[in-house]
Image 1: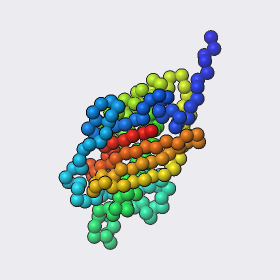
Image 2: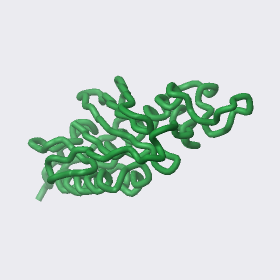
Image 3: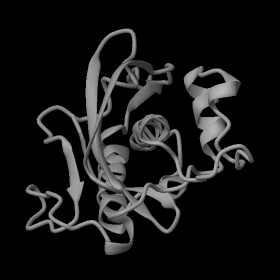
Image 4: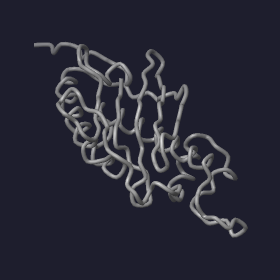
Length: 199
């Protein structure tokens, strides 16, 4: 018997199965389909900006930023304050958000193990991504995903309070465009995603 041909899909097309709700995850969830973030910023993060992570130069290089603007892993001896300025912090947060967005998309497509997201995601968000990844794996049976580089169209970031940022990333492949919204919170010297919605 000749096997039926496998249906080909693109990365963005296959992120959300037909008829499925968007991925929503966050702290304080009340049910499987109504997750929302309701937590508060830790007191230790209310009054200062987080130091820039050592990974940020690599993340900014991934974004195509120049090297002189991406030096964030070393202290500047000419600067009395080693904490990031608001502009630098925004650049850091956007870089992290883009990497998390792409890594999450690749995870849902089965191109990346979900364990690689553990350091970036809050436990509740990680659990929801893990669940959706398993659902997507079952949905992909009989189809072939063709990896395509994602094109980032735009990013918007706002800071509702110190130590907390909300970022929206719009990305696409050659056929479709989607958006990923997330809330990042300072946690033990790095940024963690405490809420995320991938449409």
